Image (cartoon, rainbow, N blue to C red; front, side, top):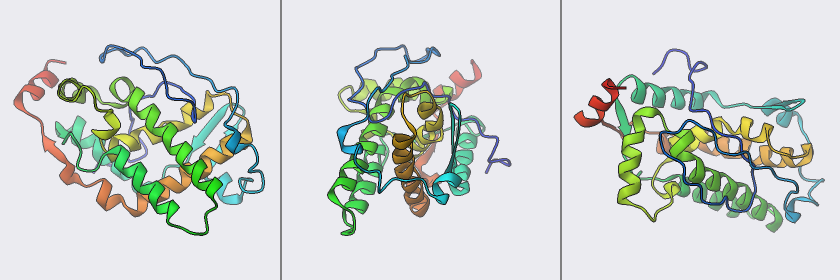
Length: 242
């Protein structure tokens, strides 16, 4: 494991909104470092407008995130920071790659989380709907951002091979939990640059916090080091030539 879990740098994500309609298809060269255009949200979905009595700030909310002017910080659990550190080290220090298609994909993880919440009879139907919308927004942004903003450089050649082999499959159905976790680690910048009032930010962060807890509980399933494989000599040669 990397020594300092607080110093791991995951790829910087381009800013975008949450809970938007599906992003339009964007064709951007995989090697491009130019960020995607900022997508702004002027209004939240109607389903979120009448939930004031449910989504008020609590002490736990304030511990989970801090909002200072335009800056939002999401508190990543240490157990997940460790997984990000292991991921960074495996790829950037040990020249390993994730086995793609993943045995458990990002879409699978989200579906399992939604199912776990839907099975609780105490949840009202409106809450189920909001959870589904928040998770849908995360998956939409995962599909748009993976190739340009979530992958490490060493993974780019593998990505090109994967999308050529599965041209009609969303990457959320190919890539797994650790790539989803990289996205979540950068969602604070996504939310910071979106046009959202504090009530809607509270709503989104409430379920992001709960989703992170779900990932912590299931970390041995979703973030196993057995998901990594040794990169081929061709990939290692490309790394040496960077």
